Image 1 (cartoon, rainbow, N blue to C red):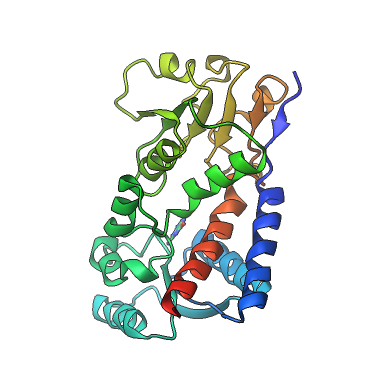
Image 2 (tube, rainbow, N blue to C red):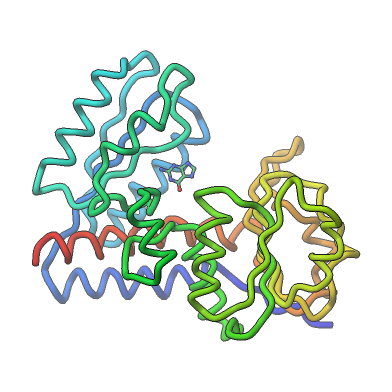
Length: 280
Ligand code: GUN
């Protein structure tokens, strides 16, 4: 069986070109404050990629890189200042924070209108109730890949593995919006194999490798692998054993080059959306 490769790179290219075109057309230059606390190497790479993507698209990234030992008051003052600054359209607080800072104390300082990550309870709530809002970037990126490749969602059984606030839960809401029938599985789900085997669309966002066996997945399934792991040999892999699925399932998002680039693309999308609303 030929497996359709659901390329996030290809989907990203199209959407980023649309965003850049819209910025040129409207003359609105969105501004995104990017706040990074500490020197976690993975976070530094993510942030650099986000800033580069902003520049390429015509979004102004305002970088605030703070040292590891930043105290709570300093971070609080910075976020409050950015939130009340009308020239800032979006604020991204890169997670995780250093251990002495609890994200629960700081994320609420970013108002829903500037919450380009889609983490704010108002944005999550509006997503759930079917209103327009800033949606969580990774799950919205998954929907955009499926649409780009013409994967039918309406009426299909989508099985989501993982129930995080950032991926699993908003993924459930977005799939429901697209009229899928949704099952959400998690670490306490009994008989995971049975649920996996009934999926028309399988979204794997467990953050762990080796849990889902390739043999559980039916050939008719469209598979989305949200995981990203750096292996001992330096290579990058998803939650699934991709080589076992290639040629065995209907469609698959590759890792790398699948969901990963879409997270940044939807951040750009949200920043433009916030800016257009902010300038009305
Ligand atoms: N850390 C890892 N992924 C993300 C993300 O999408 N947004 C933020 N703010 N932090 C992250």
